Length: 350
Image (cartoon, rainbow, N blue to C red; front, top):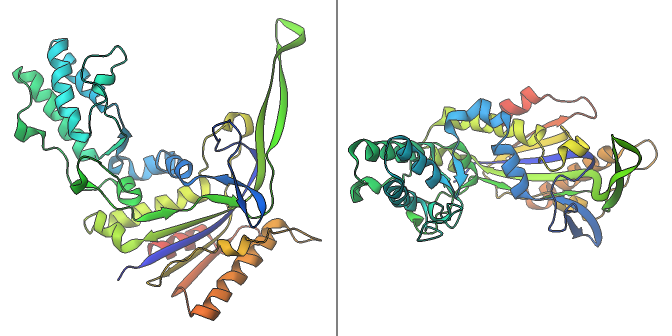
């Protein structure tokens, strides 16, 4: 039986465009018959795993997701004195370990050294591939078939253990994600607005040197995470200490790190205003139902206070009809100054 950790997070974002759609406007969703702003789970996960928080806490335990690893291998062999043709051929052989190559013949843009799909490469796999490239350069001979068995299930890459990986051509080395992340959405009705702006030419200040517009939106977002603590430890081969470090870093990231879209224009650096953490073996469930009816602020009650009230009421109603949906809970409320991040971290680590 798995032990689950569930996080329910409310974060207020001032006007921003953190996650754009194909037209460059903030992403949206229709929920409860009203339009909401949305931040995709993919955007959030990338922001977290590439953040300074993850790097400082877990640097040596982070993989790299790329199509272009073959370029690094090619450069290692070129630096080792291998001629271009052989270096390219051998880099292709090693790089093909991680996926099907995009092109068969040399391309000016190096597509022949790239694989078709992004592959999340573990630190041990990357080190082994680079070491093999150096060996090839030293002996002036390409890789042998036995040497190309570079993939491993030793997933001590925390980001892979958390968010999983899928290798289409090597399914035995896939990793099931231990962390599920929802799309964040505003708990209230929200619209995308347009910012019309102009830029003045410093050497010709009498008129606009540039005129443009960009979409933006603001709101209070609900985010839900489900963490399978049991699976996380399994993915990390029973390393409980590393799992605890991973959980601490993840909690830091989800409460403090936001996607980087248009940050220089909007500086939307937001900390979570409220977090409810739950633990237990019960079947997980989101509390998004609390916001099917858009929340409204009224009187002296803020939007955040209204959202907290709705979320906690939904949690209690689920418990009333299904029985306890968690064994224990911990709450941090920055609006009321209740709880602390230290207590929340200790609770999540268990």
